Length: 132
Image 1 (cartoon, one colour):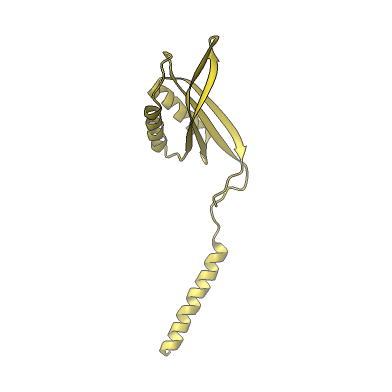
Image 2: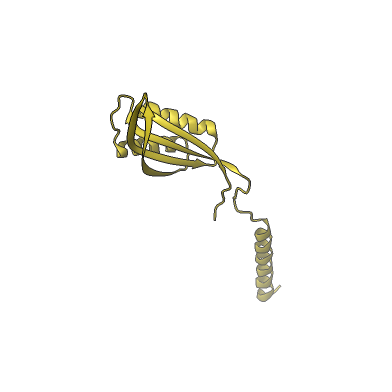
């Protein structure tokens, strides 16, 4: 076999492997509805004192990392009634997907304990997600 034939054989094998790989490649997507969880952490402690947003964010982010959870978060402002008193406060909102409800509830309980948070609201919804 001469040099040109060897190069042609290598090229043919590479082309075959490339085509075969293209047919087998299936990117990770979720096409069925999956649960998405949103947790609202009201930044008022059990004694009614404001919790520093940066401190709360650092604590929650570290707990998310310890649970190996990806998330999207943002800061909001909200209000609620507790024992007949209208309370407003800064709120950190965290959204989670590709996990289960027990994990998120466990995380939320850990956050409540770590920060002595009085108000945490949990929301579960169904969504179709994919990675582009």
